[in-house]
Image 1: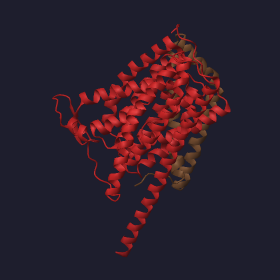
Image 2: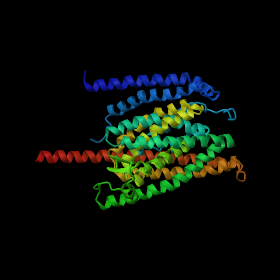
Image 3: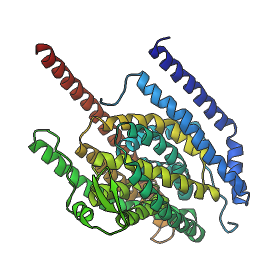
Length: 78
Length: 365
């Protein structure tokens, strides 16, 4: 398989995973709001929820966007 | 905590979602290019959608640190990041975040959400006026010098203050930094980091202090300062997000929606820095700062009225000020995005021309 094909496949792969993550974020939107309220009520352990979500999204969506522009030919000056 | 009012998270309507993604994309482009700054558009934008000031700042911070991580890794590949300086400044910034965050919580306790709105806007106006004006003046000088040198890029030279800072030797505190190619006392870096964190916890854009401080006080080249700021933003952003999350102020839905657009933008902004000259980075930074200043200035009377600190404004005047303030904010976004895109397109075209010339000369040889 050529490099170009692999890179396009990886763009699509990361794009799909990213879309799934955002769908889950939408579905569990109410629960996330509730987690914040629980933190306010004293159940402090839930503060980890937004931090963990931020890390997962940054890796998946970050890789997707990086490869997306590279696949379109937008790269840094060499 | 019991004394605090319940936090109002905004409704995720399609208009809000689409706007946050679009605003995130453009602000991400600005962040990737000038190291920070998405927040000076995003915080007021979230507040315009109805998020209280403290939730806007907290959620912005939660989107900023993953974005800064992605951008820092990318710009480190271009050799623009001074990781050591970024981490040290970031650690001191963390202390500033801690103090600044407690200050925000106290304001909210005493004056409610409108109190935080007023405080955030007032800090924006003061910081943007001083630093924005300074950066803009320096950018104009840089353009003149560039024209005088027929566009040939000059070797970076530290300013007077930076030269003095680099000349001070305090035993036991000196460290070498590759971005300055000099040893500097950590005692100079500590207050700069602290001020960056203090500002970041208040208005979520510590970079408005951090980047100019690195350029003018430490003597770091502008492109490296904006890249190193991303490390500072990551270190303190993560700490700050944890602090705000510990009190339940982070609306992660808002944060991730902005991230959806901003990570696309951040990549373009970061790539853009490899094609432009120093003064262009300053120009973009200065012009955006000054336009946002006008936007916040227009909105101040509305918050003062809500606090009953001035004579009541008519409903019509309040509405007009809201619209004009928001339109000015959009203008800042458009100007920032267009400047970066124009700089990027011009840079790519020039690079191609030079490359073709080089190939032609090589072929004729």
